[in-house]
Image 1 (cartoon, rainbow, N blue to C red):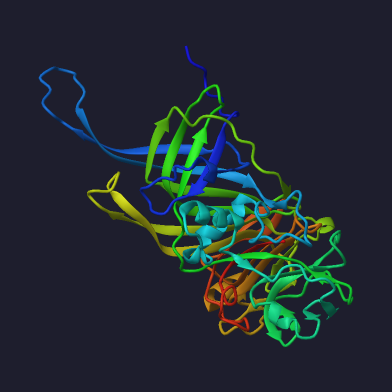
Image 2: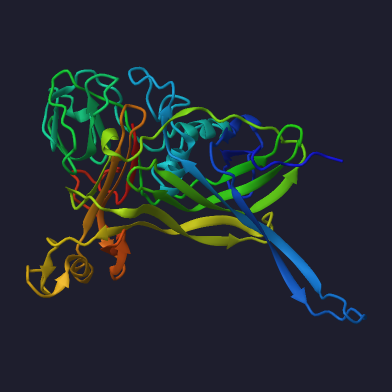
Length: 448
């Protein structure tokens, strides 16, 4: 009798592939994820035909066709490597610095993945897990801050060209900084970097330095398909190979006092069992992203202002996928393409006696539409931002520069208080000083 497969003693490993139907077979390319036990659903086309079987009570025949499926797993957000050395290493450049979840999210968003470099599949795979296709800033710059306010960071003379609109900026007094200044750059005038919104902290000192950051952003690039290996312990010597993973969605929980958790959903094009790939793999160690609390510089913003009272906060990416069929493809499908992307934010927001009431044209009134209803009716854009990080290597941020409500704000209850259930989607945005990505992109995620 063989050994059972304990789901708690399993590993999930991923590597990129060059097309939907050809799995990556190089074991050294695979990266282990520190995630919850995945939920895998196999799908096989089965048609039931009422064939004449010749016997009473005999079951109808099933005609079995192509197979595919879905995999869902969650990852508590990690930042940069536990051994990260900010002065000598850089996310997007140095091997092993960036947590795999970020590369997966950047791939779904698009970023610059169509230009992923590498002469061989293994080379491209290595660059993928570097996060090289996300936007890298110029890296650590010692004492590069000349002066700063909460909205403008002025760097040393002639170094403004080292920065780019749309990228995430982090500055602080040394590598052990616990209250860094952070924000996305909106515009650059010579050496003055204007932030998208006011930062919580200000590092106004000519000894403050800027740190390496990595920014993923929404683009039209098609994501790279992946191969997954879901394996049991070495004694089981057994695993499943899932071929052609294409991201369908991810959802990030962003409630206060919690470490953000991201849940991924992938569709895959084929699967098979393999009795030779079993064996657990220990994931690399990364700093956990700081919980979203004030002592870790956590904050949420709406329309550029600090927002309190938010509950049930999440940021979600979803893709509309189109299958392209081919009779000679392994399971009858040779490509799964993203035909549209949506980024949405949902939150429950408490009612406040100072909430504005507007008339139909947006003028303040004593009777009319509550502000959220008015924003929906007038298609008013509201930015949404999340920031957290008590130290370099643990910093995470997300920004939707222009979100518009997509549904009627519903009255609800939060802790016995009247509140509004609000949902908005990222809409077009052109407020940055440059339209070169990540400038003027509709959604961004960043690590530092």
